[in-house]
Amino acid sequence: MTHVLPALPQTAPPEPEPGQGSVLYRDAVVAPLLGYRPLLLDLAVPAGPPPATGWPVVVYVHGGAFAVGSPKHAPLGRYLGERLPAAGFAVAKVHFRHSREAVYPAQLHDVKAAVRWLRHHHAALALDPDRFAAWGHAAGGHLAVMLAVTGGRADLEGQIGVAGPDSGVQAVVAWSAPSDFTRLPPPPPSSPFHATGEDPHAWLLGGAPAQHPALAAAASPLTHVTAAAAPLLAVHGTADDAVPITQSETLVTTYWQAGADADFRWLDDVGHVYGLRTREAMTTAGIDFLHTQLGAPGPRAGSAARN
Image 1 (tube, rainbow, N blue to C red):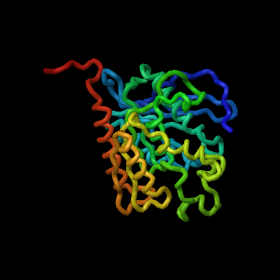
Image 2: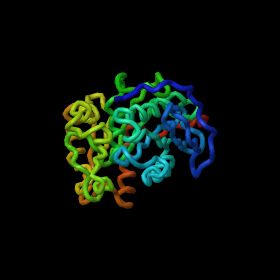
Image 3: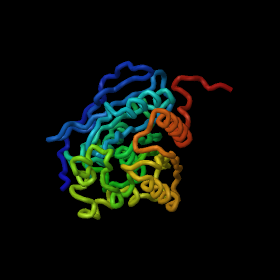
Image 4: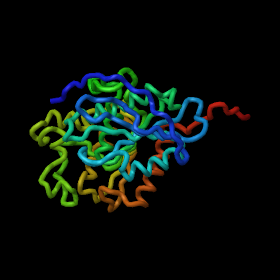
C-alpha cells in the first residue's frame, strides 16, 4: 500500500559553496517526510555567468537495483559531476526512497519531486526551466526514462514536495536500464542479491512481478511510451547478465513504433558495469546527445552580441 504523506513546510536552496569549476548547493531539502529521512539533492552549477536563460539541467539518478547506493557515493555520479558542468550543464544528484523503505511508485514520486523543486527555484539557481534532462544507470536509468515518458501525467506526480511545476524532462540518457519488469530474470551469480536468494525487484513491487502483474506493468516504461516521450539515448552492453540488452532493444523499438525519437548504442562484450574507457566514451556520446536535444548553453547573461 502507498500512503499519502502529510505535506511539510518547504525549504529554500542552501547557501552556495565554491567548487572546482562549479558552484555547489549541498543537501538541498526537496521534501521533508514524516517517518522517513528527508529527500535531498546536491546541485552543481557551472562557475561563471550563466546563459541568459539559465543553465540546462541534468538530473542524475543513481543505480543499485532500487535497494542500495547513494548519489553522493556512486562513481558515475562523481564522474558526471565533473564532466557535465565542464560541458555547460548544471547537474542535480537526486535521492529516492529505497525499495525496503517504500514500494513503487514512491521512487518515481521522489524523483519527480526533485524535478519540481529545481524548476520552482530555477531563477534563484540560474537554471533554464525549459531545458531539463535525466541521466541514469540501471535502476537510475529506469527512473530517468520514467521521467521522460510520464511528463504531464497528473496521476503519477505523487503528493510530496513542491506542487505545481512540471516534472517532465526534454531528453534522457539511460544506461543498462530495465524497461519491462514482467520479463526481468532473477539476480545473476555476480549480484550481491544472488547469495541471499532475494530479488530486489520483488522488494520494489511488494512481491514477485507475477504476483502483482498490474503494478509490474505500471512500473515498466514500455507501458507509458507515446509520441510525446522525451528523446532517448539508450546504451546497453551485449554481455549484461543483470539487465538483458533486450530490455533496451524493446524500449527503443517501442519508442520508434510510437513515433518518438530514440537512439541506441550497443556495447559489444560489455557487462552491466562499464569500464573506464567505455564510461568515458559513452559520457561523451551522452553529452553530445544532450547538446543536440537541448541546444548549446547559449549567450551568457550580460554578454554583448557580436556581428
